[in-house]
Length: 603
Image (cartoon, rainbow, N blue to C red; front, side, top):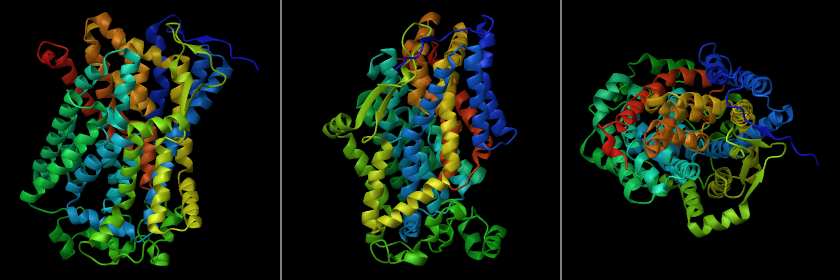
């Protein structure tokens, strides 16, 4: 067996110029976003072109051996499949199982029984429940599941995807049981509690404004004007709980505490306050919907456009959810209640109107309760240790022998393969339990799984290409060159540090990966410029989460979850302004924390 020739990442391989090398290193990312956002190219095509460019740069510019470049490409594609796509496939499969039964429509009525106002539901589902899912799972599962639940409540597919993506910001730094902060501790050596405390003094400010943005996305200025009190309560409750948990309690449970506190705060608020108008599923007031005065309602009835989901129109759950289940390809919808209405623990009372019975409510939310219970059990220390011992292995990826410019082996070439304890596997177990609860035959469950794979075929290619791009850039040294160039800005680094974290998450789709990639670099740059290493390390994580809504793999996950194949470019154009705006907001905060103005906030 031959071993790969050792390769050391060069820092400034292009004419010995760090600036020129950094410009070329940034080209694959720039090309990716331009092809998507300006030329509106399909996501998988843009990703493949950017991947090809990064491979050429790695071989010609950074002099990485061809065999190692190809091995890095394969490693990226494998990591895309497991764990990321493994999560998406099983999360979407669970959703399609519910669509294939009468319980999907009951779920929609259950959600609307809490509030008929889509603006408030966007806070409860995308912000609160999404944060709870982020704390337990992460890696795209919150976006996929929250978007599906918003559609069940009657929200349009594109808007569901936008709301789910933007809501998945404030909780991310402490997501997956604080995996990003733990990774940051591992690569920087800064005490975990110190990093947790500093991050918990940044992300709450983002949490404060995100619910306000969500109600604006759903209903524009009217939504902001009518629902700002509950949005402010949600943001303040989440931010304060996140600060308290990260600074004084257990870092791993920060998002769990924040999500639960926020749900309680919002529900208590709704007992004493309601918006002046209720905005229903068509985006119009309840009075306008009942009177049939809007053109969108009449157009929906006559033409059958994709204005509402099937659940929103009160139809059978299979009748109007083609968007959610991939159109004609998503056969799970076609075998819904109309054909097998008796399946799923007997006939549900979901074909009627009004609040479902207690039994129906529990059955409708059963899949999501199962997910929470399964993931919670998996986090119990003794269970987690046992699952790790039987379901986790770490190995060096074949064909790679890469050292960084500092002479140390590149961390990215070592793969930790969690098979049994992986988020996707736990979702698979949750789906099987859902099949038992809903009395779905094994053969039917397998068919729905096959339809899920067919629906995601282009998403799979897109995500594999993007992660291959990420690993090629990382292992060849292109990413390090780009990061060092930004870190050489001297005293201005406090303004560029958040941008570095943002680029890392936009590239990898993961705050954990970005922290592993740039955490040590942030600390080294802080030491050279006289800034606080703790502040700059935390900034990488806190600011990085604003890039998650633009990472192509997350855009692909959201598009697939709502059944809008090829909508990644549209989502990118609609969200890039919000992403950059939030990045600018937290950059100002971090800069102030680096000065005497807010320096007292640094532990």
